[in-house]
Image (cartoon, rainbow, N blue to C red; front, side, top):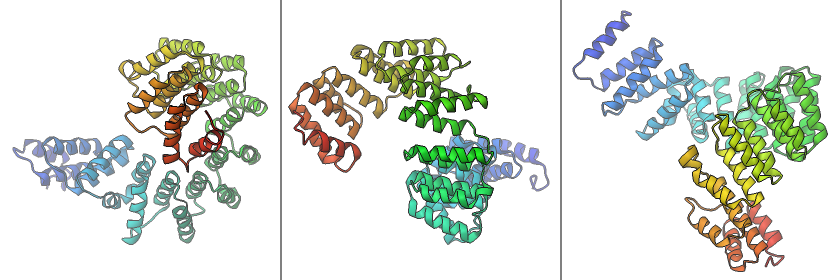
Length: 453
């Protein structure tokens, strides 16, 4: 009654004074807050249900998820989505209730719920829910990470039928989907078809796609077309292209891009500056790499990591450690990439004691939980130092299965030191588990037939 009369304050006070609340009263209050755009209070009240030991109704989940969408709170929305699945409510029903807030659907897809997003879209089609361009973009966004090429093609036909293809957001989502699944021909065709309805996002998707598929010249062709169309490049454009120059050590193009970065005043961008440092380092110009780093007014963890990686790449382990120490002195917290670069630096410089010390202190001192990449670095560190027994024991004691990269690294060390028994162990694991993968093919085709021992 109070809420229908616009007396939200009275309704809230009455709710607070209730001696005993049940799910009906909890849900009603959440709905009231949501309808009156008091989304923070709706979420707080929702938390109260859990504190009382009750399990919320589906309508309570729907109301509070709408609140998360309006507040653009991805983290809370994702947590509530997980709770909904935990208590047995389907993702599809929740999403159907929130179709007017498809922004949350898009954010959930971007946060890894890609399969659920595709299933939800199918349910919506079956239940004849109205589909708009925002929901189409959300679903296309889910196709790329799953490499769902056939679904993406079907969605493209569906988009054309609905007449959404001319929407620039849908066109960009289609282009991004094709690039992520590796169909650069279809992605490029979309740019040609909708050349008048493109923006910087269109070009970035294609440039990223060509860089990831190792078609560097085509990536630069798209960049030239971008400039011809007088679309101003941004930090993402340069990051992708300079990364390609770094990976292929193409110095001339890298220097030209650096000059353009300065022209557009993007040299202080953390991503661009870190990749410039990396590019000069991988091209062998350590002095230029240091100069680029020194010109950054406030280097963050990305730029520090790049400089550590540069020294690791050239086998200057002690210099990499010096940079790490300076990073700590500047109150920059190291992250997972920091330790991958640092462990690689120790491995390539024979700094066994230092490398093991950094690995053992990752979580206890710096709060960084070791991942499979860090364990692989330690195995490489032990193997390069001839500690093959220790490396084998380390593999056996890992909290997860060793991957192909780990076994290849161990196999290489066994070959180097002539340890036939352990080499055969590594070869057997590769044959049994990774024959069809790139690492398995590499080891079997190149190492084993050549009688590595």
